Length: 186
Length: 186
DNA sequence: GGCCCGCGTTCCGTAAACGGAACGGGGGCG
DNA sequence: CGCCCCCGTTCCGTTTACGGAACGCGGGCC
Image 1 (cartoon, rainbow over the protein chains, first blue to last red):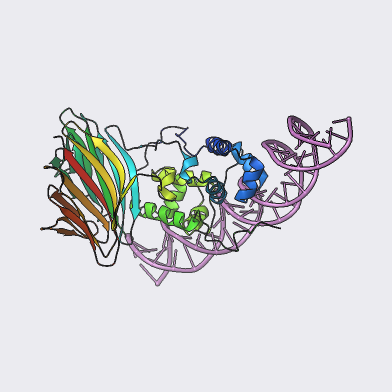
Image 2 (image 1 turned 180 degrees about the vertical axis):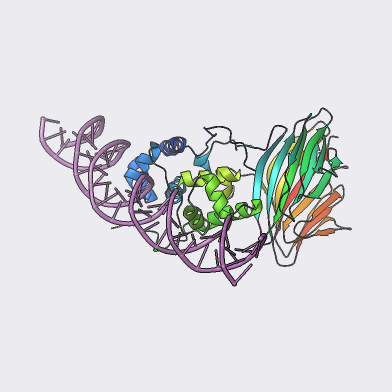
């Protein structure tokens, strides 16, 4: 399922120009010169200069050397404070809160919003994939399309999603929920 | 005097290897082959292969192309968020991922780590408060102290926490889980 | 069995990111 | 004024990340 790319110009939180500006801002906030930061971070002045001006496409190693010297996590220069919501479709908006990898399985935890008045169907996942949903608000009907489950606020649903499954809000209220996807290691 | 270069093959703190493993996990979770992901993301198979194996030092552009195709923010494949509010006990570390307030109740979603070898007890909450736990890794025993429940990876627990309740890891493995607290409006 | 297709890795020429050095510019100071 | 130091940019040779192609492998199919 190729997700519908927003358009030719994606939100692009990886804009080299924006990254450069954030680095320059962080450096300026510390009152450090470009030369000094380049030296202490162990990168070339040319590299840092081009990077701040957005005319280069830095490697992970270079970025890390600089952000470490600035004392900020790598993510601080990659995107604005707002995390990009991963839009799954017209009636469901899912935002990845955390992903977790274990030896046996990997997990993805989403915040889920389901708008009333529609149903959204997702194709089957691989065998063994399970979904856990806990409803915060509204009434949610979700699960396999031929055997959906229903839960109101405070309720919990679980199903194996190796079949087509859907999400729909019952009533007029938007549904808020958490969705946990569990992918067993194949 | 030349600055101490980070040795011959530094563990590469921005750890390309860990990044590669996360990408591989995300890809495997979606059941997509390396070849397919490389093609849809618009990068070479050689690039993606080397990247997943940690033998290359990707550029920002390459990383973004891949994470965008996977539908996760760039930060998802980098080191975890170290700057989120955490509640910390001797054996339990809880990180607040999101809180949500509804007309009927409010919710708090935590990532939970339970270290082996101890038990942590929380006093009773107000009546009506419920807790939902989904275990990612390890074996968790949690719930009311006089009637605890047990779940292994992939399992789900629920109890009403208007009585004293505890959390403990069974076995040697640290437990990772998500915890959802529901506080009904008083 | 032979065939084919897709898998992930390896090879290799090219493009570009890298660090060192050289450059022009602007203060501070005697 | 001349001098010196540090600033940020630009030049340049080296290194390396890049994608296309070729490779070996295994699984499905006839």
